[in-house]
Image (cartoon, rainbow, N blue to C red; front, top):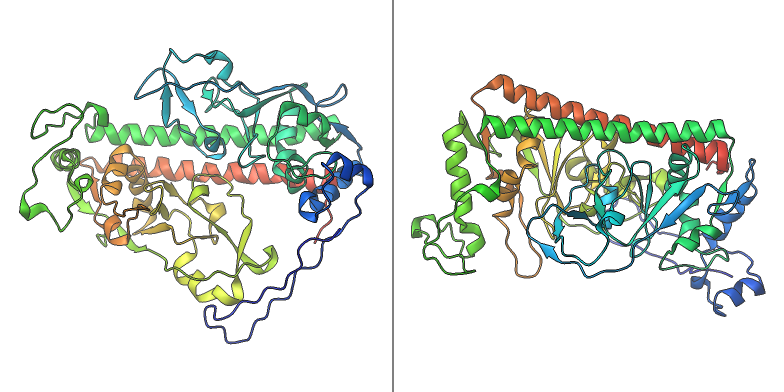
Amino acid sequence: MVGNTAPRHIHDIEKPEKDYTFLPDKPKSTSVSLNDIIHNKMRFEASAFDLEAKAAINLVKYSKYGYVYLWSNNGLVANAFHRPRFKRLFVEKSAFPIFQPSAISEIYPKAQQYISEKTDTNIDLLKVKKGMVLLTISGTIGKSSFVSSTLDGNILSHDLLRISGKEQYDGGYIYTFFKTDTGQKILQSNNYGAVVEHIEPEHLQNVVIPNAPEDIKNTIHRLIETSYELRDESNELMDKAEDILYEELSLPSLDDLKVSYFRDIDNVRNFQVKLSRLNMRFDGSYHLPLIDIIEDHIKKHAKDVKKLKDPTLSQKIILPGRFKRVYVDKNNGVPFFGGKQLLELSPNCEKYLSKALHKERVAEQLLLKENCILVTRSGTIGKTNIVPKHLENWAANEHILRIFPFSSDISGYLYCWLNSEYGYSLITRNTYGAVVDEIDSNHLGDVSIPLLKNQDKQKEINSLVLKANQLRSDAYYKEQEAIRIMNEDVIGVPKN
């Protein structure tokens, strides 16, 4: 059975000096038994079978340590479950923040919504426990996370599979297998190689996993445990830096700021704006009184307030241009990710930009450097991250603005302010667009940055953020070492 082998031709891309003609991919083929077809609803087309998944299953079955079915009598899973659907009663604030499935892959997951205590479900059973492995079961199937102190005891969405290992070291081992390409292929197919669109707990009964010796399982588990401990420590340092920032600027919670409106009308925010302050913006969100209150507050409590574009704060703010992309294989390209993956420790890089065709653009606009700051500029605006060392020389798409701080002496402090709820409000006030929200580099450059009266505290904030950022890279390297052991020493993935 053969997949799509249609030739692809790319023309007029980055005006290459040479004529590049892209040959078709090598045909992918495998044998499919009559039994496989019967179990896959009598489907005969190649797209109904994941050929790579069948190869992955065989790779595990013939690995040197043998295999077990993940959830079986001699398997590694003690229990696996998700919660039934329920009607969620969302409220503005409550004692029950709820995390959505997309948050589990973030470095520092934070709840964006709250549910009412009157919600008709067992809230305690939605809470996850330290050492569990979490797995997305619909939409994007197979995203996984390991529950550490950051998520321990928190409420997560019902449609996440909660997996507990039999032995103490099984959790990290299972998680690492899920993070490999082999594990992903197997998770996203059934035992006959057919593509699946949803995972139930019973699916794990048909998932094969290498059965490595206990010492190897323990080594892998400990690497993952350490990786997540480093993430927890990083998150604590980020929180400490933000606490100092709030204390030095006497910042209350945004919810506690009192906003006065022109006329007291229920559910209608109305206010006056002087003609001299319109700035050619007629959208109400740009002129919200909250922004004036923030600006007045930081002017009162800061030593000085500068714009982000001030040359003493930033060297440059880059908005990359749009371009026609050419993707190549891993060995010939630059890792390339987008805004959805901005907050992940290890963006799942499935795309690689051609070094040959995009060399100049990558170098001038797209390449990331350690401690530069990234801000999403379209769709979901204002997500902010500071680039850790392990993402240096990766590339991000044009939907992300890049801030290159003046020096490492200010980069951590800038990130701390922009990543706060105050910084977010100042960034998003510039939003424009009727269908897709946008901001540009000029808008970001006009964001106000308060500089502290106590310079020692400002330096402390900067140091805490940079230390936290380094810990994130340390966490990444630990996880990658676990994945390397799984691939090379356990599964036996052939080297390219």
